[in-house]
Image (cartoon, rainbow, N blue to C red; front, side):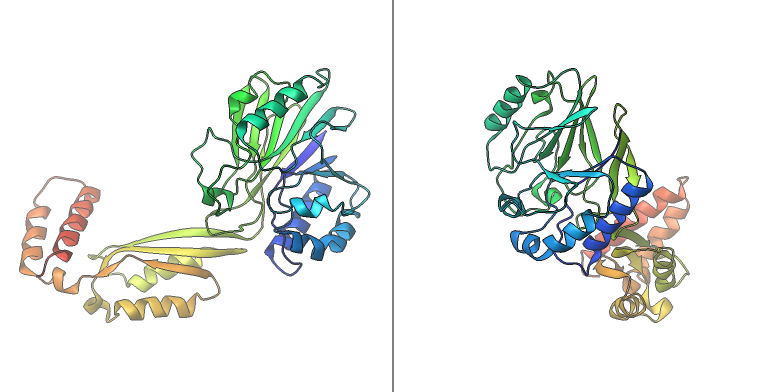
Length: 353
């Protein structure tokens, strides 16, 4: 059995990148001939979005030959509590004690409830008493794994409380083969909890916040095999770092433009500019440099973080010239010379020269 596992689409409307990501996922599931598509929570961003989109979702989901199984997340639990119909081949697991029985596997799910880790642990133990160990077993879970160093921003949330927290050792003696999880947005993440068990966060399939940097992924695997990353062509943010060398004879705008022109596709760029340059050399002030970048790359850029400095006065200073003369005499690598130069310039920036 081939399974596509995703989560955290946070749909709000039909006319945006998130909806486009969903249509791409359904197409991939069809092309890869999956038998099961799993959505581990937060298909919708809110109850209002679910009410607005449910008929369109029903039409979209009804065109597929495979089964779609999902659980409510913290954002869309109220949508599913109302019993909305999303299609004949769509199954929502609303009771953790009642799994979906398929030929090769039983699918269990923890629907959204605000509860502490002791309650989650109790439910895991309760399932162990009724689980069929002759079959493979999958648990759909939408919550926080405490073994990680994730912060609230990684989950796309602004709340401070722990959301359905678990630890890997809760599952160490369990009969689950896979915990297909959702709620963690930032990246694809796999942990093992015993010899045959995998805990998988696929990450959001489309960037919902600027925290979700890099190409998005889903978990596309065959039952009995380890989870596998599958790259998507969906909208995402990419972070570009440019460091300016004050001794370079190349125009700083050309350096930045060259980096930005290499990037293609459905993505927005978060540009970080660091380092130093001499404006008198290129007749380009700090403000002019930023405005030129914004004008030429407005369609690509999400934001610019400008940490660079114009150091024309420092580079013309006698103290700096003497420093460079002495530095050139030293038998050290070009990389270390650059580091020492940066430290010297930064120090001079802190004093009144």
